[in-house]
Image (cartoon, rainbow, N blue to C red; front, side):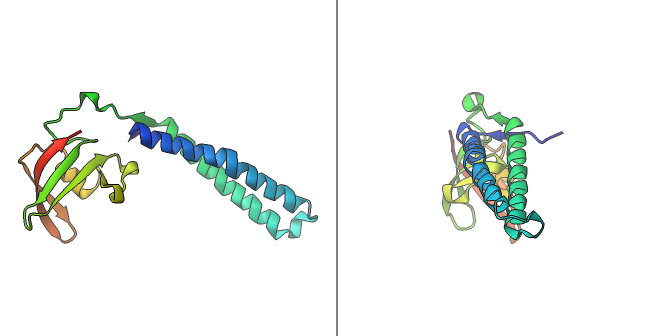
Length: 157
């Protein structure tokens, strides 16, 4: 049984766009490469043909995996999520208790995490430590460098 993954509408659309790119752009390009290599003659000693067939196999595997992920994808409905606690899709302002530094994060599903955009996975150590906490709570986050404490300053959507 495949794992169910949760996505925002944007995240799911991104996956569908990737799948469309693989099917409509890359698949025809590889088919063309195979056709060109086939036209060159003897297939038993044709490295271009072998490389194109291998690339085709890898592409078809990517397409198959992406189709499976999309078929098991579920959209996150944030309309009924309680804003008083940290949940997935919460925007959280946290303060490092040790140095007073504040940072904002959005908690997202694991496959949508992007640290540059300040989107962290609910599966990450910080994400796990923040889940279920309320404003004013202190979260003890276990990191490779030791335990860090973060105060929940603000929760929003």
